[in-house]
Length: 89
Image (cartoon, rainbow, N blue to C red; front, side, top):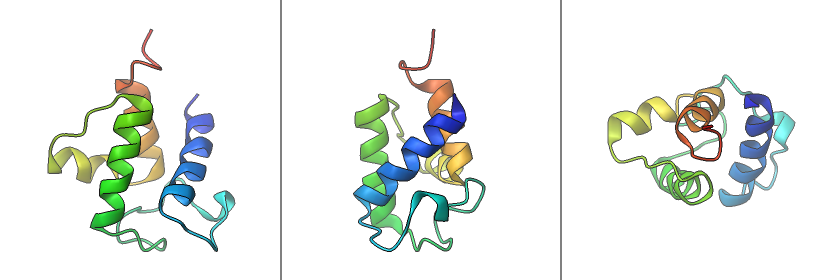
């Protein structure tokens, strides 16, 4: 479940952040997202927050949660799996 979501998130991140020269396979699931090799900054984080809230119905309402959530793609996917109504049974 998480690996499928990671692949989906890679595509969405490339799309919403307009990362033209980046392919999904170029994104390491365990690499730092913010301040990492993708050059993701605070504006990009806001766009990712909006995507997560809209697509997965997961509310990100404080900075500490955001820092934890955007540690890596894997932590983001795990948080979504644990908190999104789409994955909770």
